Amino acid sequence: MQPLSTLLQTVPASVTAMMMQKGRELKAAGVDVVNLAGGEPDFNTPEHIIRAAHEAMLAGDTHYPTSWGSPVLLEAIVNKLARENDVRVTPAQIMVTPGGKWAIYATLAATLNPGDEVLVLDPSWVSYGPMVTLQGATPVRVTLDGNDNFRITRERLEAHITPRTKLIMLNSPNNPTGRVITREELAALATTATAHDLYVLSDEIYEHILYDGAVHYSPAAMPELADRTIIVNGFSKAYAMTGWRLGWMAGPAEVIKLARTLQTQSITSAASFTMTAGAVALDGPQACVREMTAAYAARRRFMLDALEEIPGIECAPIEGAFYLFPRFTATDKDSLTLAQILLDEAHIATTPGIAFGAAGESHIRFSIATHMEDLEKTVERLARLVPNL
Image 1 (cartoon, rainbow, N blue to C red):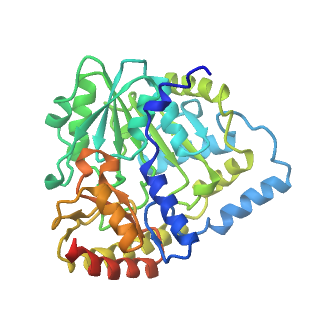
Image 2 (cartoon, rainbow, N blue to C red; image 1 turned 135 degrees about the vertical axis):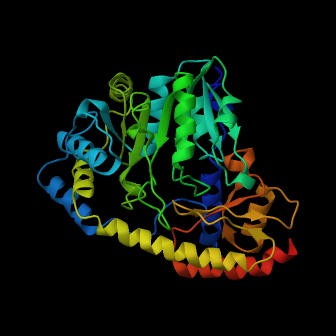
């Protein structure tokens, strides 16, 4: 037999997916597992969004759509960016995708060549590095300091730049740390990107999930970054539409043109009727987003207060997204071992910090996008287990 892809053989499977599956298998075996490994809102998609898709299907919107997005959704995204982010684009600068993950992949495919390097700010989402590798490029891990609240500085960025550096990947609010980038950090990133002629991929999927007055700033709103930033966003987190697989990207027209070519020659498009629902989500009432975020805020407060009472756990107060990233301070066990112990002995499925890069070691990621009852069980089980680690 001919050898299979050597490139894909170098790409690891998702640790998040692996831990979620382990939790499912235990639950199917009758074990009372609390599954906090994934990033799935426990809310159903708001009814008015579901109704829009249903009505579109009944009206015959079940055929091939325009590959890069329906006119109504492209216009809704144009208006949303101007209204909420102070970013001005045209429909030609947008591509609708089947999920935000594909928007990230398409951005990398459109900007990178083999041998290019990409700065990945660790801790970072588990798929960033592998997706860079799949382009024949190299992810360069910029380790942010947990003792400095994972702050981005120009010095850290500059220390990793070479003549081959092409792009910086930014995620704010951040998965897994819950950090929201400040204006000072954004200025440092802008200075670095312009000095070295770099693109910026800005993953803004959690932009509406903010706490305690935190504010989301898009780098594309900065004049010096407007022509070099590609925004990636979607509907999964803010509108609880994970199963709809609907996302989008917006950026320089030349980047979007290449991304559209990739899409027409690969997955073709997102589903037609989901685009109608997406436009209704953006243009319609936003009370549903505020209500879900308020629920996450209550869970966040409960978990932060509870973890503070457990010796051996330190947890910074997250500013956005719906994850906690506590550090386990009273053990020398690595995060993979810790995650397995939490699963085996406390029946809590989590994601080990090492999955997000070396900067995440000694941390464990907990999703709080689940019922309060599950979080109460989590705290009770941690209180029994952690002192004995």
